[in-house]
Length: 305
Image (cartoon, rainbow, N blue to C red; front, side, top):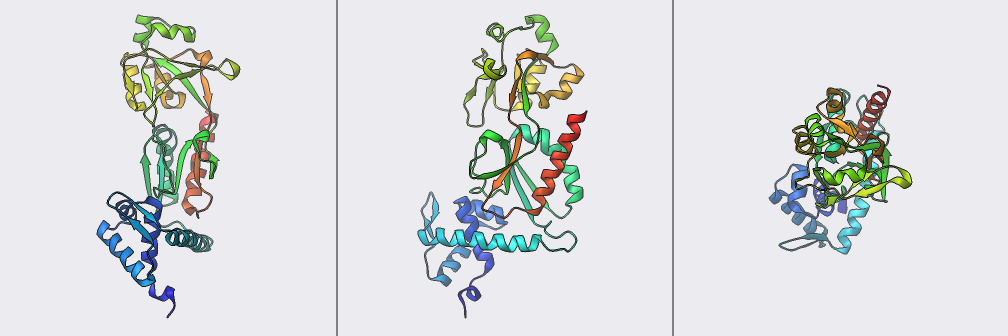
């Protein structure tokens, strides 16, 4: 009897999930199991192979040297299996299972929300999981098929696919606020205004970037209110609390309706396009390409409006 005959492929999947997430609990959630079931699967696998694959402690879990080597080879093997299944000519082949992506909040609003209805129509059998968070993460270690970030935030070992044109960061304020406090004409004028501080995903305070090219500058603005959520920032700005620094795409409706007005238009700063990124070492879910195409198509249509 060969080693493969004695090993359950499901146990190998559990092992791979644990090595990626470095957590029995996270792997169990990813696979729809209980932590106890994941633990039993690992114990069963190590007994059948007569090899220790994981180092365990009360706080962490990591693969042994043999475990790491096995994980790398299993990744290659499962990639080949996935590619073979994806290349089948049967209708709907490859559009099964779950597609998990990690997206920061602005991209979720601008890209994912409009794309979901069409994705559901084209991929009715795919379970799409979208986790929205702004903190920097390792998508492979945390069990995601892909992520969306700005191009300069994508790790170098990842494949990055642009989803949009370059984005514009603008300053916006409510008409009532601007009538009461006046319209700033130059970045230096912000020193006499109330500004809503921008909190990044890593919890650091962000200095507003204004201008283009060599004239681009980082401005530390005054303001006692710091918000890490774009929707809350927009709501505060509409209420006249202060000026907001936001993606133009996030407040397009507010600008059109007049609840917010563009401020310092000549100093709007350009940033990199949104990018979908994924590991170059892993097989990609076939439905990921469908989602990418839907988003890019919708962004092209938006550009023509």
